[in-house]
Figure 1 (cartoon, rainbow, N blue to C red):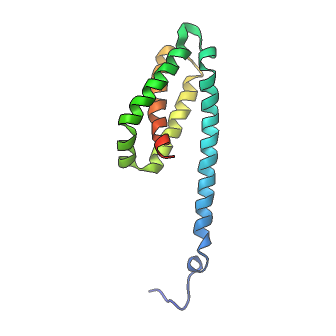
Figure 2: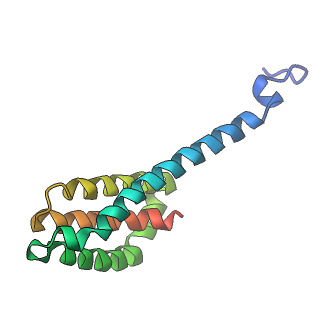
Figure 3: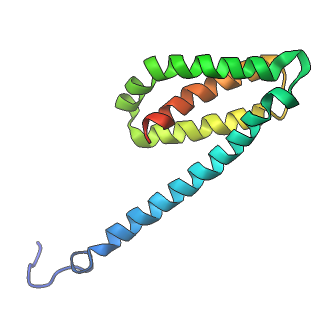
Length: 128
Protein backbone atom coordinates (compact mmCIF):
# COMPACT_ATOMS: atom_id res chain seq x y z
CA UNK A 1 0.00 0.00 0.00
CA UNK A 2 1.29 3.44 -0.87
CA UNK A 3 1.81 6.08 1.77
CA UNK A 4 1.34 9.63 0.43
CA UNK A 5 3.29 11.13 3.33
CA UNK A 6 6.54 9.49 2.14
CA UNK A 7 6.92 9.96 -1.63
CA UNK A 8 9.27 7.65 -3.47
CA UNK A 9 12.46 8.83 -5.18
CA UNK A 10 10.81 8.75 -8.61
CA UNK A 11 7.99 10.99 -7.44
CA UNK A 12 10.41 13.48 -5.91
CA UNK A 13 12.53 13.82 -9.03
CA UNK A 14 10.44 13.50 -12.21
CA UNK A 15 13.40 14.67 -14.33
CA UNK A 16 14.85 11.11 -14.26
CA UNK A 17 12.38 10.03 -16.92
CA UNK A 18 13.08 13.11 -19.03
CA UNK A 19 16.83 12.47 -18.86
CA UNK A 20 16.29 8.91 -20.10
CA UNK A 21 14.16 10.13 -22.99
CA UNK A 22 16.78 12.69 -23.99
CA UNK A 23 19.52 10.06 -23.86
CA UNK A 24 17.46 7.65 -25.98
CA UNK A 25 16.74 10.40 -28.49
CA UNK A 26 20.43 11.27 -28.71
CA UNK A 27 21.45 7.64 -29.24
CA UNK A 28 18.82 7.05 -31.93
CA UNK A 29 19.84 10.28 -33.66
CA UNK A 30 23.53 9.34 -33.66
CA UNK A 31 22.76 5.86 -34.99
CA UNK A 32 20.58 7.36 -37.72
CA UNK A 33 23.26 9.86 -38.77
CA UNK A 34 25.96 7.19 -38.81
CA UNK A 35 23.89 4.75 -40.83
CA UNK A 36 22.73 7.30 -43.38
CA UNK A 37 26.19 8.77 -43.80
CA UNK A 38 27.54 5.40 -44.92
CA UNK A 39 24.46 4.73 -47.05
CA UNK A 40 24.74 8.07 -48.82
CA UNK A 41 28.45 7.55 -49.48
CA UNK A 42 27.84 4.11 -50.99
CA UNK A 43 24.87 5.30 -53.07
CA UNK A 44 26.74 8.32 -54.44
CA UNK A 45 29.61 6.16 -55.66
CA UNK A 46 27.34 3.40 -56.96
CA UNK A 47 27.40 4.11 -60.72
CA UNK A 48 31.13 4.78 -60.88
CA UNK A 49 32.39 1.92 -58.70
CA UNK A 50 30.11 -0.83 -59.98
CA UNK A 51 30.45 -0.05 -63.68
CA UNK A 52 30.70 -3.69 -64.84
CA UNK A 53 27.51 -4.45 -66.85
CA UNK A 54 26.05 -1.18 -65.47
CA UNK A 55 25.24 -2.88 -62.16
CA UNK A 56 25.51 0.41 -60.27
CA UNK A 57 23.29 2.32 -62.68
CA UNK A 58 20.57 -0.35 -62.77
CA UNK A 59 20.77 -0.64 -59.01
CA UNK A 60 19.99 3.07 -58.73
CA UNK A 61 17.05 2.62 -61.11
CA UNK A 62 15.82 -0.22 -58.93
CA UNK A 63 16.21 2.04 -55.90
CA UNK A 64 13.99 4.75 -57.36
CA UNK A 65 11.27 2.34 -58.49
CA UNK A 66 11.39 0.52 -55.16
CA UNK A 67 11.06 3.79 -53.27
CA UNK A 68 7.88 4.74 -55.10
CA UNK A 69 6.26 1.33 -54.71
CA UNK A 70 7.18 0.78 -51.08
CA UNK A 71 6.22 4.29 -49.96
CA UNK A 72 2.84 4.00 -51.64
CA UNK A 73 1.84 0.53 -50.53
CA UNK A 74 3.97 -0.90 -47.72
CA UNK A 75 5.05 1.71 -45.21
CA UNK A 76 1.70 2.68 -43.67
CA UNK A 77 0.40 -0.86 -43.03
CA UNK A 78 3.77 -1.98 -41.63
CA UNK A 79 3.93 0.96 -39.23
CA UNK A 80 0.35 0.36 -38.08
CA UNK A 81 1.01 -3.33 -37.47
CA UNK A 82 4.48 -3.23 -35.87
CA UNK A 83 4.74 0.35 -34.59
CA UNK A 84 7.28 3.10 -35.00
CA UNK A 85 10.08 1.58 -32.95
CA UNK A 86 10.24 -1.69 -34.90
CA UNK A 87 9.98 0.21 -38.18
CA UNK A 88 13.12 2.14 -37.30
CA UNK A 89 14.92 -1.07 -36.27
CA UNK A 90 13.92 -2.74 -39.53
CA UNK A 91 15.20 0.25 -41.49
CA UNK A 92 18.59 0.05 -39.81
CA UNK A 93 18.90 -3.64 -40.74
CA UNK A 94 18.07 -2.78 -44.35
CA UNK A 95 20.94 -0.30 -44.46
CA UNK A 96 23.28 -2.86 -42.93
CA UNK A 97 22.24 -5.47 -45.52
CA UNK A 98 22.78 -3.06 -48.41
CA UNK A 99 26.23 -2.00 -47.27
CA UNK A 100 27.14 -5.70 -46.87
CA UNK A 101 25.87 -6.49 -50.40
CA UNK A 102 28.17 -3.80 -51.78
CA UNK A 103 31.19 -5.74 -50.55
CA UNK A 104 30.57 -8.26 -53.35
CA UNK A 105 28.72 -6.25 -56.05
CA UNK A 106 27.13 -8.76 -58.41
CA UNK A 107 23.86 -8.21 -60.20
CA UNK A 108 22.15 -11.15 -58.45
CA UNK A 109 22.92 -9.59 -55.07
CA UNK A 110 22.62 -5.88 -55.80
CA UNK A 111 19.02 -5.83 -57.05
CA UNK A 112 17.47 -7.79 -54.16
CA UNK A 113 19.66 -5.87 -51.71
CA UNK A 114 18.48 -2.55 -53.12
CA UNK A 115 14.83 -3.65 -53.03
CA UNK A 116 15.19 -4.70 -49.37
CA UNK A 117 16.85 -1.39 -48.63
CA UNK A 118 14.09 0.63 -50.24
CA UNK A 119 11.37 -1.25 -48.40
CA UNK A 120 13.14 -0.66 -45.09
CA UNK A 121 14.05 2.91 -45.98
CA UNK A 122 10.42 3.79 -46.67
CA UNK A 123 9.62 2.61 -43.14
CA UNK A 124 12.27 4.86 -41.65
CA UNK A 125 11.19 7.85 -43.74
CA UNK A 126 7.59 7.41 -42.62
CA UNK A 127 8.78 7.66 -39.00
CA UNK A 128 10.62 10.95 -39.38
